[in-house]
Image (tube, rainbow, N blue to C red):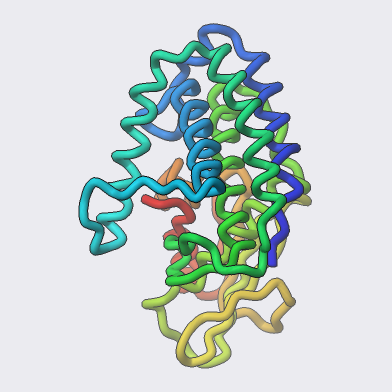
Length: 272
């Protein structure tokens, strides 16, 4: 279990402090989220709070289309996001920040009240799960808040959440998608891939092939067949679709079977 519930108030407070420090021109700056500006990402974070609170209240909006596949779901979510961000252009940065502060506190309280061992209302689809535990759902929500705030910070040049306390739970959750990423990759039984997110805010993960699928662990495994080392600032951008695998590869180092380790670069821990 990856524990993130206690981090939401900390992350939210850092977001509010960041937004209140921005200059008028900062809100219009482009971000790694491609079509979204800083203000658009802030609006999306508000939508995240509001949708979670709607779920808390047992209020659900039925999709306006049939969903038969992962790509159908992605298209639907992209539509919801685009409609919200377009409407939020009418909201001033000050009011947007005030709304984020108010809803953020309610959002964090609702997260704290959850039974983390229960079944989540929706599975973590990017990890290939059909059902998920609540702790994983909450951790996934944490990664959303973390990487979108970091996109804003990256755009305006103000750091503050690339710390062990706040970054590691995000990257640890991202790594849960690795077995699904390797689902079509076979190897000899006992093959081990070591994934390193370097510096003190990162860590080590190991994928071991058991003959049918890949098992993820942070327990050290002897004699890895392949090793890949990725800088933290490259890892979060890559796994959240901020940069391509080709762009990331210029900053990554390999040892052993590089072709096998390179599959890690295909990990996508967002709905896209």
